[in-house]
Each structure stands twice: as structure tokens, then as C-alpha cells.
Length: 300
Length: 300
Image: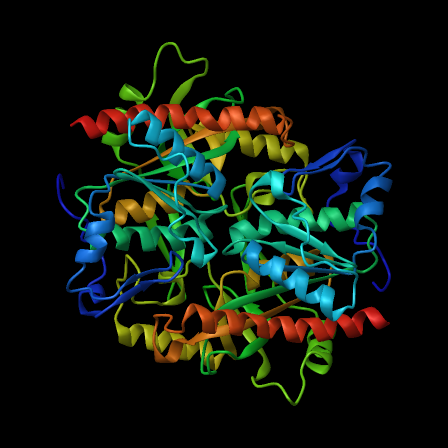
């Protein structure tokens, strides 16, 4: 797998004369000669993805500093015309927003995977940098995902294809996890970075056992039983993307990692009580971890 | 149900002293005295939702013209600080973005339902205004959803709650459909508006039987068999929200409708070939239909 361009898992792509990456608004005019795409994106080694465009813009600015790149204080949104996702390029790193949850993320993930293939990127690494709820860890803890569980508490991802239920494994790259933990963490950090399992759900309220949504048909006791069961499976955090992200990247053989900061300890409650300012400080923690990891990665 | 404030389906809300609608960044400081929220949002009769913030902003500007409201050419994004969703208020109408797909939409839907409850809104109507793929109808057709199917071709929505699979019905309000078809459509329209079933999937590529994603493990023939089966169920369009949206609103007893314009006829191919300019023209068609419907509704 090392130093190879992702082949993806779709034989039809070879037969398509052109490919319009619709949601990114990037036109691959000639799939037999993608030199224009190679010129723009061929040097990409890492694709970072996260919920909001503003956070991805901040990450791009941060990484350009960390990597000592020429001034990128005002990076250009390469997907502005599509109005759905924001994407910035700083040196060999793409920073792209994916919205909230698997449905929106899977759309842009398919298109980013096709983009790195057309661009001829060598062994690119896909990273999600996100926020999440924590389980038994203090708010502000950074969690690097090992196994991804879905809302049914299974270490897999379920998807309906041609009207049938299809189940796929959902594991992140052990090499990426090991390297992030080795190079991303420093003893002087004012916060903890831990490696553990993650549950990705399709619903923030009922899907994560919250009792403060518009619908709740279970008791506080039911919820706590569920959260403790999650915790007993080694699940340290809950978000809305991990199982889809792990399963798609594992399926196509692209190395990936999920690095999220917890903004609440769900064993203590459902409402997010940190201030927006605290949240912004917490959101920078995965930047630190991922920034150090990427810097080391690019030295090789 | 007429002229009543949505009660929702969560007894816990009564016991919560405050409620922070996290993703909207709206703080309900005192749930026993929500007069501040009532003052800001109590007059809301219609909540419009759609994928992008820019489209919801354009809808807000359009509706303020249609409804003859004082100048709203530059409406304020009420959720800007949350960075995830954009929300505009023009008179008795909220226009809020929901992103791509059910996962992101369900988050903001739960919070909007709680918002109209705290605001004491009388019998509010929730409308989704979107874009979609069409089945057997020409691009540019406006489809008003009757029954919502999920990716398993069932007229229901599936959600994992406390680790268990929960299945709920997914029907839109017959009254809303009838009224949209009666008041929203005009003979002089240069496009067709039809009422039919909609499939909402969690994946744009494999979930909708596309052969141009990063993964495709089925043949063109399998895909066509699937799409024809969809069509035989009365499904005229495919998007990524309908089944979740119908099931949640039906469950809490809030009237809702889904009005989408098709930008492709999937029986003829997978790639979106209309230009961005055509797309912007198509996107205005549901505005026309929904604008006339809302105007009529507010006269009562």
C-alpha cells in the first residue's frame, strides 16, 4: 500500500470520460488526462476534514504556520461556488468541511477520494478533526479513535445499497493511531490525549441517548444503562461520523484517523455547558495534536 | 390540533430549568418564563428549512418581497455564532439551513421544534425546500412529497435508539400537500409541480444507486432494476432527508411538507450536467410554489 495512488473500488470510473465532483464544484474534464487536477492537487499528502467551514479555515491558517509555509493568513475557499462545503489548501494539506454527521460527510468523502485519485496523490492520509461528547473523560480530552461503533453498538457501519442492508467493518488504521499518539502528544500538554473506541450515531438526541431532544421515550435510568454499556465497550466518545468514515476508508484502502475533542462528559449530563469561548479553546487542541503529527509525517 | 402550541414528546423538558439550543446557539435561560423567546419568535407560523445557508438567505429575501414586508434585503443570520446553521427571520417565517442529509437535519430539527414550543408558536408548519434527483420526470420538476421511503424502500424511518433499532412511520400532512398543490401551483408556470413519493437515503452515491462514487460494487443493470423498482412504488424523486423529516414531525404532531426541485433524471444517468446557472434558476422554482402557499396560509 505504501506510496501508491488510491485505486478506489469502482471500475466504472475508468469508463467515464469526465467526472464532475458536484458538491465540491470541481470539474474533472478529461479523466484520461487529469494533468490539470494533478497540478492543483497532486502534492496533497493529508486531507483534513471537520464539521464547520470556519474551523477548517482556522486549521488551514494554523497548519500553514506550523509547517512554515509562505503566508496563508487568508486562504481561498476552493469550493465556494458549490455553497455546501468549504475547502482550503495549504501546501500538501487539504482542509475541507463536512457538516454534521455521516450523511453530509459521506457525500464529500466520496468526492475527496475521487479527487486524490484523479490528482495522483501518493498514499494520502485522511483525518477527521472534530468535536464530540465524552464518556468518563473530562471535557477537553482529545480522543484518537481505535474501533468505530455505530448506534446499534456494533463495530461496523450499516448502509442501504440498492434497497438492501449492507454491513461493513469500521476500523481505523493502526499505523495512523500509533503515529498520532507517538508524534501528536507532548508531556507538556495541558490536556489529555487518549486512544479509545468511538460511537458514531445518526442522531444527536435520541441516537445518543440524550433526554433533552424534541422526542424522548426512555427514562434517565435507561439512558445511563446505555451509556455505561457504551463505556464498557471501551467507547470514550460519541459523535456522528466515525463508523461511516472508518468503513468507507477501510473499504477503499485509504489510511484514516479520527481525532476529536470532548466538550461534555455525558456520564454527568446532556446539556453542553461550556461557553463558546471555552469551546473555541477546546477546538484548538486537536489542531495541536494533528499539527505535530502532520509535521513529522511530512519530514519522511 | 388546530391553533395549538406543539407539545412535543419529551416529558423531561418540563423539568429542565433552562435549555441551551446548542447548534442554533439560542439560550432559553428560564423554561418557566420564556417571554424573551416568545417575543422574538412567538409570531412564527412557518419554519422553512433547506440545505445551504445561502439558499435560505435568498429565500428569506424572496419571501419578504412576496409577503410585502418592510425592507429585508439584508437579513441577519440569527445563528452566526454557532457556525453550523444559518437562520433568518422574515415576519412570521423562519428560514433555516440544515446541511446535506438526515444526520445534520435531525439535529437542527429537534432544536427548531423546541424553539417553536418555547416561543408558544400556534400550529406552526415546517417545510423543507430542497434539491433532489428525479425519477422519470424532467429536470426542473417540482415534487411535493406524499409518502417518504427510506433507502430500504420502506415507507418508514429507522433510527438506532439506546442501541436498538426503532422503526417509525414517515408520512407528510395530507392537508399541507393538498394546500401546496392548490395554492402553490399556477397554470402559467413554466415548469411542472407534481405530488409523489420521495426516497430519502443516507448516502448520495451507493445509497442512491449511483455508479460514479468512490465505491460501486453493482452493475448498471442492478442499478436500473433498483431505480425502476423505486419508480414502481410511486417514487418520483430521491434526496437525503424525507424519511427522517416526515417521521420526526409526524411523531410530534407538527404539520410538515417537503418541496424539492429535481436537477437530474436518474433514469438517464448519474452525473449532474446542468450548469450552476441552471441550477440557481431551478432552485427558485420551489421558492415560487412555497411563496404562494405561505402567502395564502397567512391570509387565514
